[in-house]
Picture 1: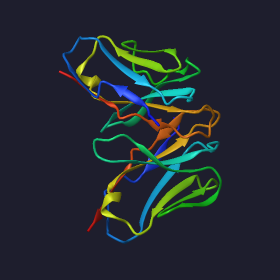
Picture 2: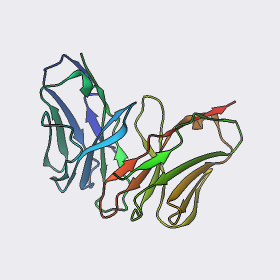
Picture 3: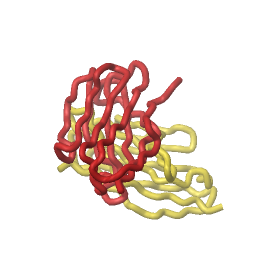
Length: 114
Length: 111
């Protein structure tokens, strides 16, 4: 079975450019989560969706970050304009809905903003 | 601010020994607890989930939960060099699907 699929795996871009990260959740999973991982702050939840609807975006650092989920099999996380401090590994995870369900992670996107 | 605390390590054990990883959490209403393993440069991989007080065993792994003490642990028996990784404790926020992750404990198993 296919797991969570993220693209691109690596992204290197210059400060000020728009960055779009993509995620395809596991088929049948109704909940989707975007995380950012850095050495200093660990793994932080940015936003999560349930049935394509954003439920909690309190972790989104600022207005430069936005996320969408136009359908059950696709989500994007966009940063515009990007800054060097956005450099991190961004993970997407999905799960069946409910408070007891484990989340399954994609391979992540390693983002470097120069 | 709901928190999950783990000893950052590094924790070093010899091959064949028992590795003990600990985690405390602040949200008394949390109901779901997970251990993830993360190899360097890779994504977190779920290895154990536990929901009730007591022990849960899966192969060489045993998760232990004590809700009264707000404490979760992971024991790895007969540790192997391939167990060398960072182990992340994750706890759900009460009434939510959100998980809060600890910063992880780096485990090294020496041959």
